[in-house]
Image 1: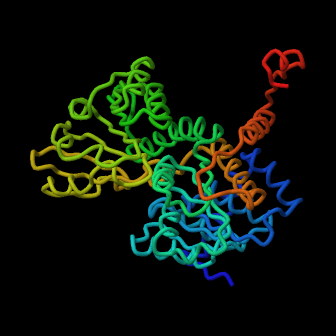
Image 2 (image 1 turned 180 degrees about the vertical axis):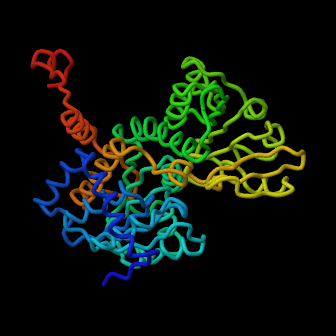
Image 3 (image 1 turned 90 degrees about the vertical axis):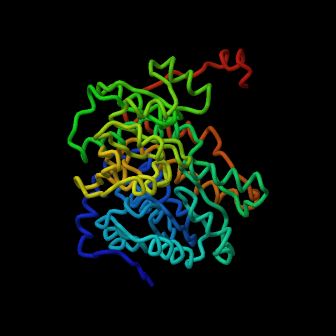
Length: 414
């Protein structure tokens, strides 16, 4: 029986309209969906998804349902759930435990209610399901084949468990697949971060100094798009190799303590804690804007802002103004949570088509290789990346060359 907990089922038609829209622009996932419908490869399987609950992730859930799975969905961030999408999924027979703006207690309750379904497979976004399955909900592992994780932050957490020999079941590092991180992290984050910032602030980016903390694939995308929008970009890094890469890409590099003096807009994309703290806030210009695109709200210290402020107020939707003791105003976007999802619609549809095609293949791979997988972190075979890329290229009207037998022989590929 569907015991969903959502905000308002009357929003279902609005949600379904949004889901139908994204479905028109996801050719790779649609190709897999056709195969899933034909072979019903997930029949009898229960899948629990902890995700940013918006239209694109909803379409992934419906794709897995089309393969015969019983799908249960909950959020992975209190501010990224879209209530019409949750209602639309319930309308289609999917169990949902999520609503926008849930408290921390409600968020944890929803995760636990999802795990009450005793999943065969989990799809995690950030690692909260995995954390529960290793702590308070070890009982929910009894049917578990394994799961997949699609965020850099979640992979960090999984690697820590694996290093300590504590990982209790197989996990696929979808985040580390080429068709995920080369596109989702770079082009997806690059566009969606600025969608969220521009939509919420109604300000220009051109002419401003943008400070990007972290020059991984997400940082590369955010910096590249900022440059394209006409900003002067400063990158902060702890890795000397990534730092010199930023320099060679045409950006200034300096420590955050120094960059704090120059920035008009600050974006954190590191996956670590305490990237912008009191010592940085006190160096910032009056009117500086801070936003985070890392998975958890721990990169820009909201606690520090509150401690060093006389007062704060809502300046605009998704923007809180903090009046510092020195008289300056610092603006924090989306409570320091993922700005691209909490203040926007997340990554573009065509980008997530690649990521979610890889997620769907990860679920299929877990089922096909259930007996041989061990409790460790796995990377999907390259041929699955190539399969998704070929589908995407074909859908866009592109063709590529193929190697002749002679060329294969020369390269030792026979």
